[in-house]
Image (cartoon, rainbow, N blue to C red; front, top):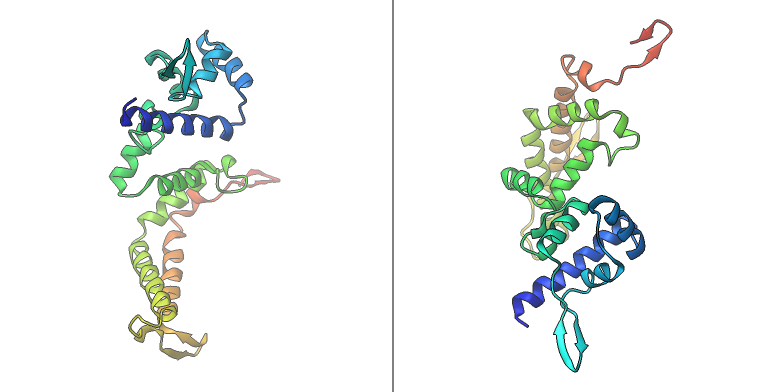
Length: 224
């Protein structure tokens, strides 16, 4: 058995088992739904699909369990909403669309999933009923002129904290303190970041943006 087959078989088994566990399927419930969608499959098939690469003995001869037929691989990938390439380890992205989106944005898959969860309302309580408003808010946040400044300020702030906490790093002058009439004694890097943050919030909630970001409320005279 080749190393390539062993590697792909190991990834296939791991990811297929993870997908089933994540969605709460047992072999029995998976088979029932698989048969209802694609019109075929047996308990023996499912058992073999979950043990690809495992060595069995038959008539005194050792033989590794092979991959499902290409048609069944397509069906299994479609069932879980992933690509065959993800199941066999050719890519770590579950879907082709996510892979292309992340490559375009220059982010990893976890970041892409986080953005997707926010935009879909999955990461926000009751958000699924407010998708239009959530997407508009996220769009205006990313388009704000202050957003790149805030990201850069956050990076600098993180660097300052790191330097402060690591004695071998050079002393960071940004962590000198200054006195502010409103906030009292503040760390310069933190203070600058807070100023950019408030600028960013004001830019996002401009009057022109509010109609798209505000959830309509039902009053005595109807929707307001």
